[in-house]
Every structure is written in structure tokens, then in C-alpha cells.
Image (cartoon, rainbow, N blue to C red):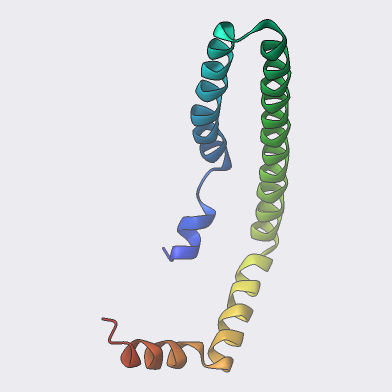
Length: 113
């Protein structure tokens, strides 16, 4: 398995769930802190936090739609065999431009091992 295959095998739902684990508790903490603020300021802060929560939900929804679209395109490419053809074309273009030789030369110049 190449590194590219490992990247494409990451499930987008895992990414979304990880983001939600970090975002949701912070919004909940902000709402609990609002209770000790003055009334007028509390209302303004609550609206800001509410907007943040809605904005996050919309972003997650967009991410899910993008992930579904990406998965559908990827599946269609695999079914038609175009994915392998595109990978071969990319390999040929990279070899043609000499990227591997340039990378080796760069590593030798900078003493990377």
C-alpha cells in the first residue's frame, strides 16, 4: 500500500467525529460560563455562541456532503478503471519531470538521511 492509498482510505466521518469531539464541549463550556455574566452582556454572548454552534453545524454538514461526493467520485473511478489509469499517468509525468532525481540531489545537499 502506498502512502497515497493510506491517505485516501481515511474515512471522512472519522475526521468529522474528531472535530465534533473538540468543538462541542468547548461550546457547552462557553454556555455554562455565560450564567455568571451580567444580563445584557449574557444575551449578546449567548447569541454569539449560538451563531458559532450553528456555523459549526453548517460546516460539518458541508464536510459530510463533500466527503460523500468525494467517495462517490472515487468509487466511480475505481469501477471504470480510470483511477489506475490516472495514477499511471501521474507516475509517468513525475518520472518525466525528474522529481525523484531532484529530491535525491536535494537530500544529498542538505545531508538528509
